[in-house]
Length: 178
Image (cartoon, rainbow, N blue to C red):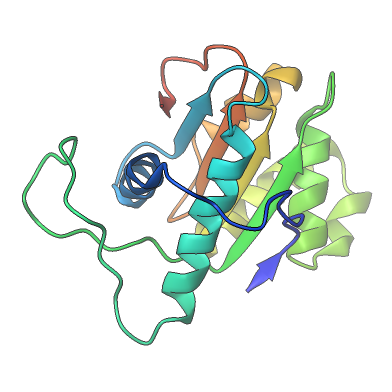
């Protein structure tokens, strides 16, 4: 599995299994492509992102489906699988990070260096085409520090690709957030 995920700053993730299961459930549902975690600095948003990736990676390595535990927020009594992704692309936004930062991370992680020489609009379309053919989980930490173009791009991801974002400020209404 291709990934540029940094190492977590913790050795064990304790508790918050309900939040992890909720995020996994939302990522596996059809429709909305962006799921988020919002909260003050130091509240564990980045750790939650890592825990979700750990669960998705375990599901990808398993020879059998891994089911999520039933939750109170689950709309139907049907069992739901932990979503499986082909790749994980991690971006930590700095003040003013734009869409180019996200597109570059996708190009480098998925080993498409030829995209870097294209214009921003060409890169945007090429990455959308690439994401339509694969199941990629884009993880954007501190998304609220980045440019609004990042959220605009993430709001309409094609195919089975999804985004999991974390921010200190309230996320846009189209983002299903904890």
